[in-house]
Image (cartoon, rainbow, N blue to C red; front, top):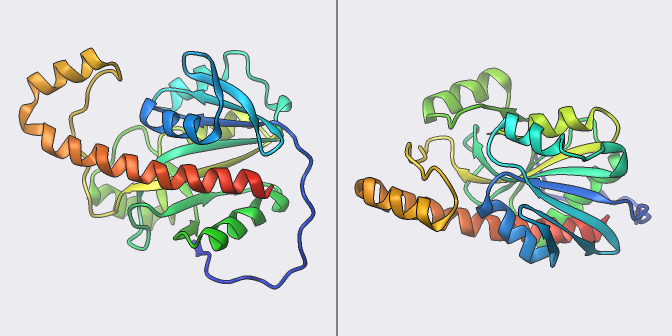
Length: 241
């Protein structure tokens, strides 16, 4: 695990070819801020396309979890059509140094020319930033599990979709996880959540789970702030490529 804190004094880096980029996000609350920041047009529900910083961008809302991500990517997307795939969104911290709002990048096996701009972007924006392993989890982990698995697996954070994005990429394109911390290692997310993202699902949940609403509202507020940070970082990173 490594923080970005200082420049390395290297010569200016040449711009990379303007190859297309695929960006995945699991939920409406991760997808929508990225859609707005990138200025893309929604071609179909959960799929947007456009040009940003001179390159074609495809933004895909996959749904939560490995299976939904795999199914979404398997629906007509070929890794060879993209120069980079980015698994974007929220993550849970598994180490105490990763705080809410910090950017986490897992760029294992990615081309160095794609990795260097991550550090450059963090320095330019002066955002808290960490390189580290993002561990896959099928469930929202309790604080004790985050701490134990973080120590055992030497993982910095966890999410539910990046592993599927890497499997889909299969060495045919580079895959990078670019996430923002929502819950710190000692924090527990609400155990209950709405079954869907539509207004009716939210209303039903509110009626049936009044006691859970304050915690859920607080989590939603923190999520929105975190995604605003990630959106700024992601757009600056794409501009730096």
